[in-house]
Length: 81
View 1 (tube, one colour):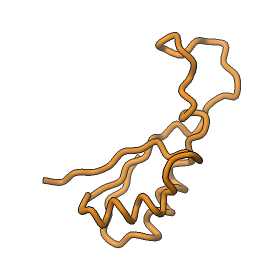
View 2 (view 1 turned 90 degrees about the vertical axis):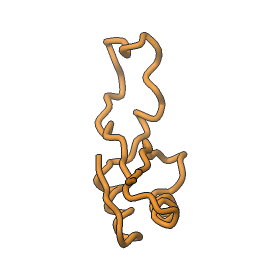
View 3 (view 1 turned 120 degrees about the vertical axis):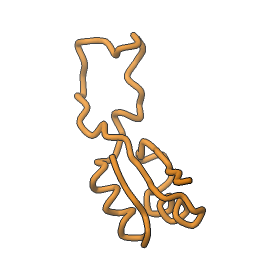
View 4 (view 1 turned 180 degrees about the horizontal axis):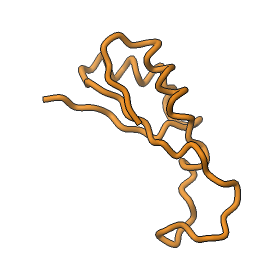
C-alpha cells in the first residue's frame, strides 16, 4: 500500500527539510503540501464557516519552494500540491 503525508507547511510547523527526511525514512511514498499561497491581507467577505480565516492560510509557505526544499534532501519521494 502506498501512503503519503499531507501538511500545511508554515513558519511554525516542522521544517520542511526535517519533515521530508522523516517521511522518507519512515517509508511513506509521498509528501503533499497545502496550496494556499495567495491569501489577501484583509477580507470583506466572511470565511465560508463564518469563523476567522485559519492562521495557517496566512502563514503557508509557497508549496513549490517548499517541495523543492523537500526534493533536495530526499532521494525517492513523490511530491505534490
